[in-house]
View 1 (spheres, helix red, strand yellow):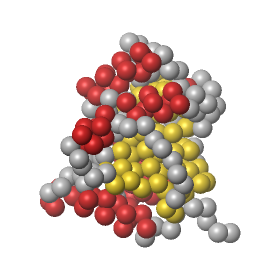
View 2 (cartoon, one colour; view 1 turned 90 degrees about the vertical axis):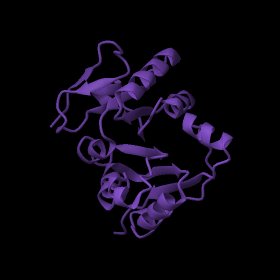
View 3 (cartoon, helix red, strand yellow; view 1 turned 60 degrees about the horizontal axis):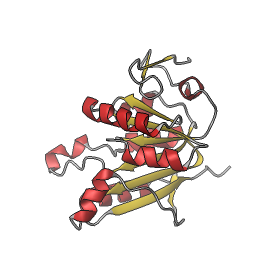
View 4 (tube, helix red, strand yellow; view 1 turned 135 degrees about the vertical axis):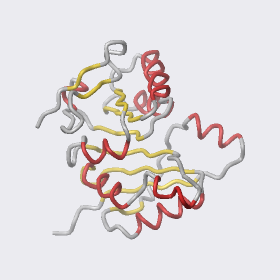
Length: 206
């Protein structure tokens, strides 16, 4: 079924609220054009999202963020940038990927510094699970990108093991430079080690 997205009245070209959260999104309605779509999960204040959209005007960018305060900051930042290829959706990332993104519709996902939930009893709250990776796999187009970054060594190892045991993804060695998030700038200033993975969806052998 087709989704009908309501654009937020205060930020008419930025934040949108789907009429239904059980129907898949219609990106042509949301962006007003057909173009490759990249999704920033947990986009925070949209520093990364705005930079990517400015560098790639031929692509559409969707930021998904759960926290209202961050959504408001992100919308103000995008409004000041005058970019027309960015939208914000306030929703839980795992739910949005699993239920709102059409199969094969996304050219790339960026998952930057997700909450590591370092205490063992909280590990089950982590974003990266087998189910989440399966949903990412489904939403990505063939050869689509999955870009992951974290400063938490244990979480990185967990993600790495999860991904390398899943045949749907292969580690990419391509040299790609991405904009730096506000959180990454803070980490760099504190001398934190940042681990990064760049993966491509592998098409099944027929």
